[in-house]
Length: 204
Image 1 (tube, rainbow, N blue to C red):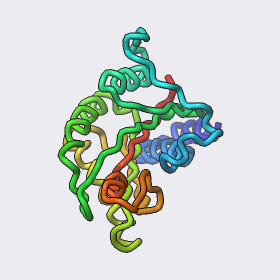
Image 2: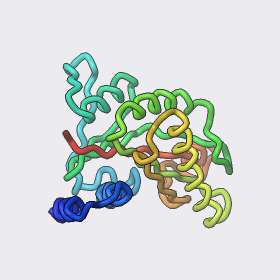
Image 3: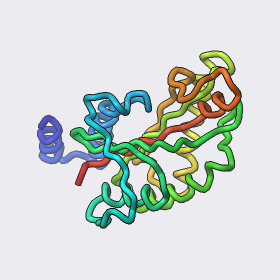
Image 4: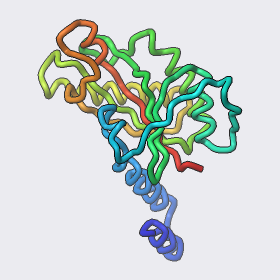
């Protein structure tokens, strides 16, 4: 309700395009504040029980909304996901994007997924994508904090290069604080050198 009043106030006062842009950012920031911070929060009871993905053959996909389009894209590419109900529909992708050791360079195996996703997102700028960067425990905390941010920003840059609107992207860096795997093994540390994706939709 507060955003409706703010919109009316700005329109009546003859607001500029830059003011409207700031308003749009405020509305999306409110969504971002509500979003789970990391995969460890995805199954928090307050978000309800995640929807279990169904096989494409079992469903008749309709494309009447961005939500339907996103879910259709994920299913057609065999990407596992969790749906997080709330005031804004959120979809957490279970497949991560991986990086080289002590680097913001993306592992080659993640590029095909980024390319396909970029093409999709460029067509639907109303879908907000949140990119969460992470590291393993190699290096100092301050180094890892910075590296996690650079990893998220690297994915943002790749998306933008492929036509995704910058206004549709948010980045967050979490350093070494939310490991997805153990840091006691080389394979576990490789698993933690990642970026995770969360999509925010209006549930239209």
